[in-house]
Image: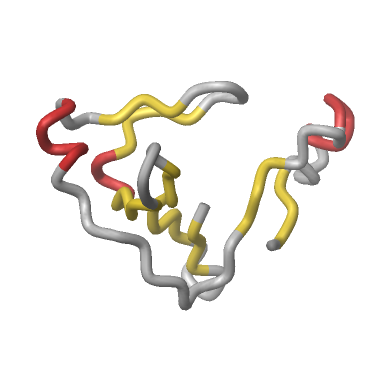
Length: 79
């Protein structure tokens, strides 16, 4: 997940495919749950996504955090 902490804006996510990592911009993300990301684009548009180029702070889901940790905002770890 890419976040803009100064403006408190969700910017997008990085997804891993079989052969590369791609950048998915925030408007293309419909919903994020614990085990699934739903996009607003179809498979053809998803295949045409650009490669990920690192630069902004990255966060990963903290799966060991538990419900209480997620309740208090500890569901993500900075990578």
